[in-house]
Length: 164
Image 1: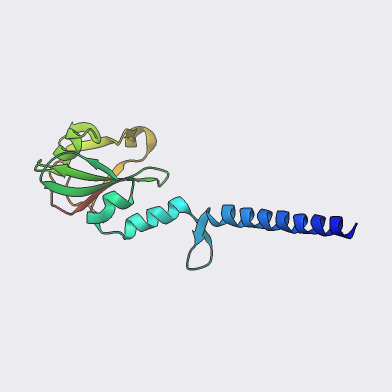
Image 2 (image 1 turned 180 degrees about the vertical axis):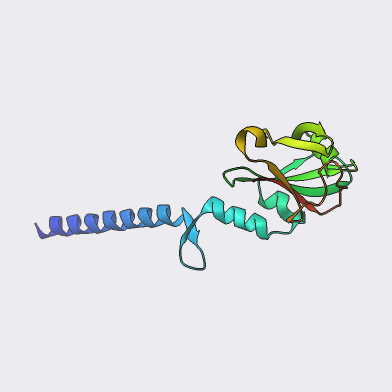
């Protein structure tokens, strides 16, 4: 009788240990903690790493999408209305960022007296006249001082469109 009770106790302990290990593994994989101790999801951690990574390394650490063929390489980031980021490494021989992105089908819009009015980026259409939002063009993290179709490609630079 005592042997049977001992086996039951050992089985119970083993089951509890397995349950605890499973719980720790599944909750431990859901994210990490930031400096304040708040939980951060894995995708948010990856996006933060992409923002902190130099442009030359971005293709490997982000989605890893390399597009185009050419001698000049730059990083192109799309930030949609929900804050989701998509990062591309672009290779091109085009002279302007607009020509490079248009050639790859990443941007589309209407010609205006001020240049290309970009309404669609990476398949996402935003129109100020209907949505009250627009695609803002950034160069190396700063709001661009020229339009995408007149901005010359600079190797290693980061260009982005963000919904604003």
